[in-house]
Every structure is written in C-alpha cells, then in structure tokens.
Length: 266
Image (cartoon, rainbow, N blue to C red; front, side):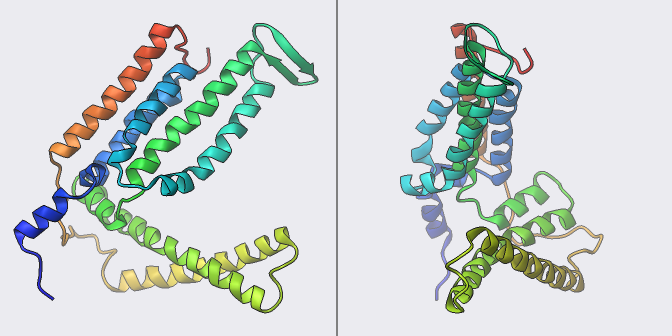
C-alpha cells in the first residue's frame, strides 16, 4: 500500500466538510461562545434567532439530516420537559389562565416555557453540529498541544472516549445473550436495571485493567510528552470563532430590538 503524497493529503483535506477543518479546541471555544450568553439570558427571541442561524450552518457539518435527527433526539425529548416545568411552576405574572394548587399558568410562565424549550435546542444544536464528527485523538492532541492541559488528564479522557464504543457493543451483546436464554422478553424495567449493573461491573473491570496497562507503558509519567500528530490553528479556526461571535451578537441584538431581552432572575 503506497502512502499519500503531500499533494494527495492536501486534496483530501480540501474535500473535507468545512467544520471538519476546524481544530477541536476551537470548537470547544465556539460552544462556550454560543452557550454562555444563552445561559445568562432567558427570552425566546434570542434563542430562536440562535437556533435559526445554527441550522443554516448544517450543510457545513458534513452530517446527513437523518444522522442529525438521531443525535438530536435526546435534546428534542428533554427540551419540552423543561418547558412544561416552567409552564406549571414559574413565577406568575400577567393574565392567569389556570390555578390548581402550586400550578399557576400565566402569561409570564407561558413566555418562560417557550423560551426555555427553544433555549435547550439552541444549547444542544451547536454541540451536535461541531462535535458529531470529531475524532477523540484529534481532540486529545489539541487539548494537550494548544490548550496546554496536563497530558495525564488528556490521555485519561482519550481512553475513556475510546471505551464508549465498547460499552455500546457490550450492551448489544448482553441483550442478545439474554434473549437467547429466554430472559429478554419480559420485565423491561427489571431487565434494564440488571443489564446496567452488569455493564457497570464490566466497565469497572475494564477501566482498572486499562489504567494498569497505561501506567505500565509510562502514560502516567511526570514528563513532557511528545505527540505523533501536531495540532495547529489556521484560518478556518479564526473564521469559526468570528462566525460564532456574529451569531451570538445577532441573537442578542435581535432580542434587544424586539424588547424581549431578559436576564435570568429578572
């Protein structure tokens, strides 16, 4: 098998989706830029604007729409749950539509419910778009070489990330084994608890063995490590940071102009 030439590698990199060219450390910074202002404010206009602008970046992620929906399913499920809790128990204000014990549905609670629901989507969507295709090794390289985090900490994160795929395979194999023994068709809750406990035991054993093996190979040595693949920042990283700043600035300015801007606690 022949190795790629410099020109071939340049061609491959050129055809990568735009977001794949951004350094993982820059993606972490971008998520912080998009998340912190939304955590400090609570209004539906800024959150809606952020979601709209983030959706417009979807073609740059290299994901298929079905893959995006599958990854966003937990966010789509939990966002309405947060909105319902605000709808029923938020601080009352304005016209009251329902009063039943501790439950009071008013204009203020409805507005907060909509804002919280959309804000959860605005917080979850950029994480999915930016990190859906990130290689754990690239992330570890960036955290150590650019963010200057301790190599022992970074390598532990990398080892844990690599084991996530094994957990999924273990769960699938365990489910098939139980079904083959006739134990997989009844008692959903009990079956889930039993399988989760077994998987926890597997994880502890595997984690202990992996930690011992990594220590034996010198991964925990208090020395400055070298890295096989250099992690660098480029024009794509600068552009990504500028785009995220513009997105958040537009979202906040739109809320201010619409008169809905609201800081958490007000």
